[in-house]
Image 1 (tube, rainbow, N blue to C red):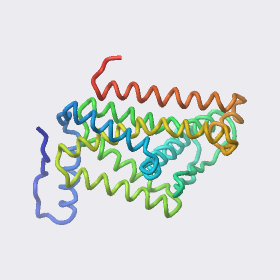
Image 2 (image 1 turned 90 degrees about the vertical axis):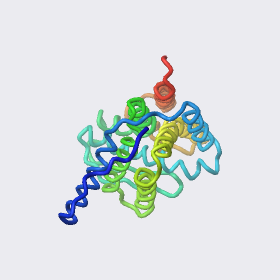
Image 3 (image 1 turned 180 degrees about the vertical axis):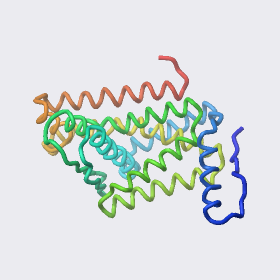
Image 4 (image 1 turned 60 degrees about the horizontal axis):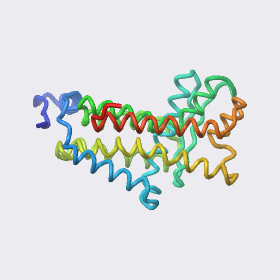
Length: 255
């Protein structure tokens, strides 16, 4: 049974109070918790699957995948030495990450490649943390990552998207019961793993209709000379691989 562990109380002023809050967050983030029942894990998977497959819900929740997609572009740029200029998130669930550097070369290829595979890899990392018992720690880590991403947002809708997502996670981690927190962590992880796959299919549908000439796959084709369809296949392979491996970790099934 997991419980909230309060930090020691202090009357030394506002800085001490802030320290107490941060201490409480840290203690609970690094304290492993018991996993929910297998029924709850499967229920969270079913809910995430419905959200991904049911178009009206997907139209809203796809913004979360877009956040992960653009954040992955940004991380790819930073890791390859490019200068990240900013990220924009749009109401139609599209996004744009702008970085400065050489227009060609490995850095640009990695940056372009990171977007579609990013949500699945983030989901895989989340599944690994759940396997270790850090469900609450996962939620707080996502809050921290959103706070860092907020520094790179360059439009109002993007700001609103990040603030809404972050506020929802803070509410869950601070006010709700431990069992609910754990269930939400599993639901978010399943959504990242499952939700990473659908945009790849959507991308190829758009490409087949001639509506995605500036897509990541087509950009990679221009950068490498390898057909865009090849890159779509690689996106699909990586996201399905992350779903398979992450799902096995969550369910405790040996591959």
